[in-house]
Amino acid sequence: GNSVTQMEGPVTLSEEAFLTINCTYTATGYPSLFWYVQYPGEGLQLLLKATKADDKGSNKGFEATYRKETTSFHLEKGSVQVSDSAVYFCALSPVSGGYNKLIFGAGTRLAVHP
Amino acid sequence: DVKVTQSSRYLVKRTGEKVFLECVQDMDHENMFWYRQDPGLGLRLIYFSYDVKMKEKGDIPEGYSVSREKKERFSLILESASTNQTSMYLCASSSGSGSDSYEQYFGPGTRLTVT
Image 1 (cartoon, each protein chain N blue to C red):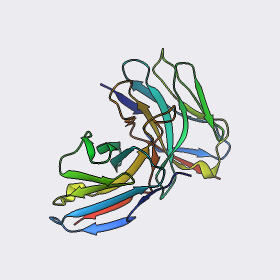
Image 2: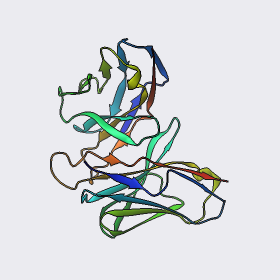
Image 3: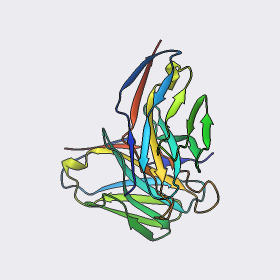
């Protein structure tokens, strides 16, 4: 079946450090892939997306590349800020199943310290 | 901007009570979803609706029901609340067509405690 696996958190970094949050998936065909972010006390919001192999999604300094050969969609940022502290969710939209359902990973909490 | 609102941010109910969680979206979206969020488990889909009066079970529908009488409103009902339903509940919506139809917009969540 379809599933998403993320690295366990929490991830604790100092400001301006490099960030990588690993995400791998299991799915048939070519699903669409997403990163959502949840800031404290808020709902989730879409951070970036990629809809086909080798696509790179980017937003707010974050990037992720759709790697079909390794079934991965790792999130990266070159220099994190305190304001990036949040929970990050990797998700996929299956090729079949209809109605644009999403399957989420468990989430990775990021804490950035000054 | 798309706005998804949920009726309560925090709710405390007693075991056995009937609980209604309301969700309203203002973007004329066809699809609406109810998730629960638990630490270490991510988001799990309870129910979704792709049209008025239409609903489909998600991955964990047991103990829940839903109602969608109007396009903009999607209600989650706990018929007889139990302590294992203590959780964060998130509502989301998405359009039914177009290249961005898979993007879901989320409400702020309702943290439900059942005692």
